[in-house]
Length: 198
Image (cartoon, rainbow, N blue to C red; front, top):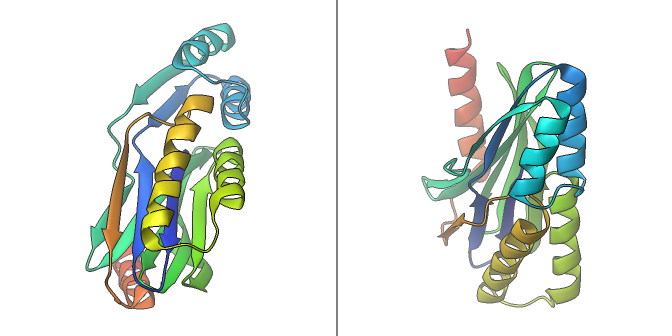
């Protein structure tokens, strides 16, 4: 789990996601220790990440190519994933002008966790990335415009990449002015997921 952040405004929505994907291979205790240190901000650089993995006997696969955000049918979709006990869990954010939904996915189930209206930033990530994002939003957001929100999101993505190795330095930013019904797309995805897994 790394970082996806969105702003849902009344005139549009914008979303950004980093590209980093890290897979851990080792015994479960060492993997858990590695994740904890990475996600609470103790591991800042890639060199520290590599060194700590060697100390714990954990083999890492690091790729900065995972596209976590996209636009589909006028809706922005961002997704982060985590692994618990061998089970991959995903959290997906759907956002369009004026509305958003957060969905938890543990195949074959998709559960709507939260829904909301415009005027909000939404952050999906690990503890350190959420802390960084929420601090910057609190300090810099003054109920500005969509372009102001875009600048804040870009600042968050850059700041996060400087303080945790869980986030890539590159990120993708997508935007929409669509008034598409977010709930309808969530329901369609839920039906397709159910059909695939049954």
